[in-house]
Image (cartoon, rainbow, N blue to C red):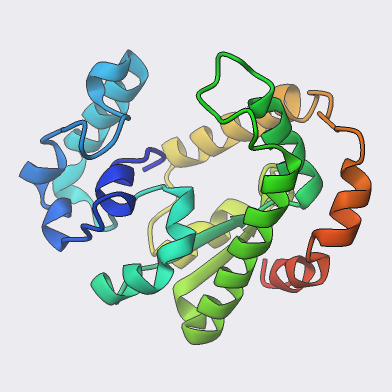
Length: 217
């Protein structure tokens, strides 16, 4: 999907009803579900319109909510046939991203959510993923962030194979556009590194666990 359709419904209300993914309910929008609503902007309205147009022929439904990583057990309890895509990024990239958002007064991100909190959440998320993979190895697909956005042959194919969906020309075009944006825009942004950050990461980030998980990618 690429949008956080039910991030409030899942994480704030602990509602994982399967009926949420019935067509009438899915396209009945409420601010109690998410802030990614059609009325929030043309971008979101267009995405939901495309989803509605292909709904009847869809074989796979999903949601994209990063913090679902912390409730994977609950997710599998309610959706035992769920498939989880875990996109992992190295801690330097994550820390830089958190720093940039914390320093941006226009971002609703907390100004205290810098590299220190990034390391804490990164460690915790990787630990949860490792445990979940051990419990249900076939239900997870680990994607390395940098490798995926390098456009290397086989990356998008592997993801489609995992989900059991065809790699259509339109899908490949969208992937190529995302890769192009990453290479030309995201990758060229200067890293946002704070004083003392490198030492903090060296002392606190569980790099060995991350490297073990990347081995699945």
